[in-house]
Image (tube, rainbow, N blue to C red):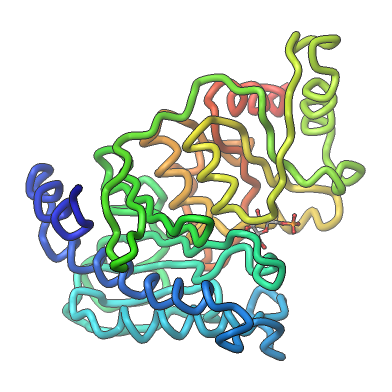
Length: 324
Ligand code: P6P
């Protein structure tokens, strides 16, 4: 079985992609191995509980949020191919090497509310080419379709790295020698599904199209959809998206009436965009109920977005309900 390094050494030249991108991906993987070591030990490494600080999102940080963020920054800033970093946990971008060709954006530990109860969490990453000229915030504000690579590491029963460089999706599983080995090539998101993921406790806050869509799913074979559906909500996007990549489904975090100025909860640059590239590469779909996620022109590093992604039939169905 191919290690990550062996895979990249063959896959990137095959698609005329530079080896410097391999170096960046290997640095991301190395940082995630360090994070994995902390996550695995939980209480034994004194990393559970609250950090006593907050981030730009207005969220209380868990100790592991801060630790994972520091690991990502420390490891990635050592790679001279990287010009800058953007993190969910950092107010502004971090400039690293002015001659670097790549920008790395990440959510260092997504789903961290699950850490203290031992439910899967993950690191999400997105890689962009650094535009010509001085590094500014605008350097990062590229459409999702511009990503040169994207993926995540899921810290679950298995630790798995899932990535794309725009030519298919590849799944690596961490072995007992701490090596990522290629275990699955090109998982396909089934066109249709009977499984949906949404936080039902927000139902009273949803706008009409989502209300109607979920009512139809809940009506099952007695309703217009003519089939029964199952529901999942792990409250960890990486776990949800991995499940959908493996067996289909639709994941939603819609805008709701609680704060109309907030288009959604999830962040475009380092959550929705990387996951959307994986979805499209695996035959799925992703949008914000208005346009394809990967076509959205970003306006801010931490901008939030409504998310509907997964099995194409369902994503398109709920999209059309919004157009009525
Ligand atoms: P809620 C985790 O905090 C996260 O950003 C995603 O990983 C997850 O899908 C969502 O928020 C869960 O949100 O409102 O259900 O806690």
